[in-house]
Image 1 (tube, rainbow, N blue to C red):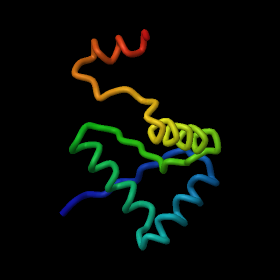
Image 2: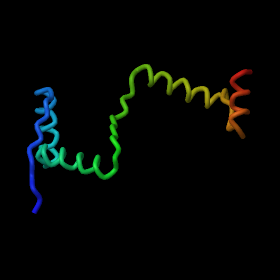
Image 3: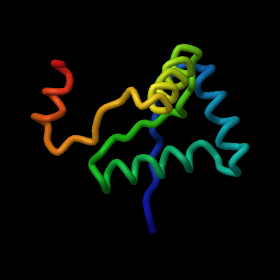
Length: 91
């Protein structure tokens, strides 16, 4: 039988409440998700963070401009080596 303990963590009240809502919407108590994260940390000795990609107006313009360059053929590559790539930047 596993012994359990209490982990007391200071964090922003709003963050806790929002995290509880997300966990609840997924069908989990927040403590289950925290325990799963701690097990993963223990087992992998890694901390991983991810965030959804948010396409900002600036990024959207950059993507559209890149697509136009590709359509016009205003691109170079592929390159055989890093040296060839670097040389293309110096043209």
